[in-house]
Length: 203
Image (cartoon, rainbow, N blue to C red):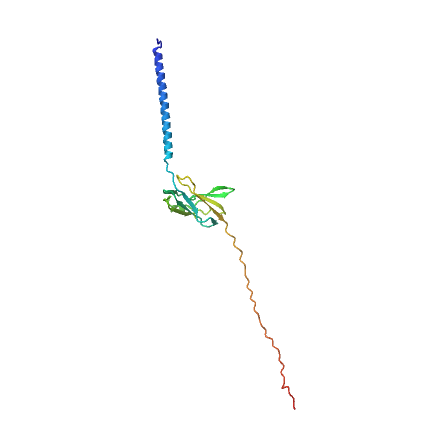
């Protein structure tokens, strides 16, 4: 015989309802979490990473201080890339080999230079883009080893190029040449020749 009071029965029912409600909430949270993880994994797996490569080269491997240093970026990817114009800052990341490590260096171009430049540059697949550091003359004013680096979105590698800058050769002192002209002067010598008679006597 069940002697439980009606109040106890109501409390027991409410307790079961609360428990069922918490179980439902937990299941709902777990389901949402699983769906979020599944969506993130699917999103990562479906990202279109670039195939091919970007190639960054310089016009020479060794320059002299004051030379015009130019570089070429070739788009070997299967899609176009866009380069943002960072003027008056230098167009690429520039590093100098200092104390056995790469140290980033900076220079600032004249604001008037930036006015005529586009805000971005698009390079289609298979095309090349050539630029120089003429407007940033202080980057390579000292002899040393330098590295330039380009960044591209959705591209895991960092295309870079290393080159050397050497000091200008010291000009040799100019030698003064003295031309000595020796002229041989011939002085005639006169030898007197005695004049004689007929050399015969009277017979």
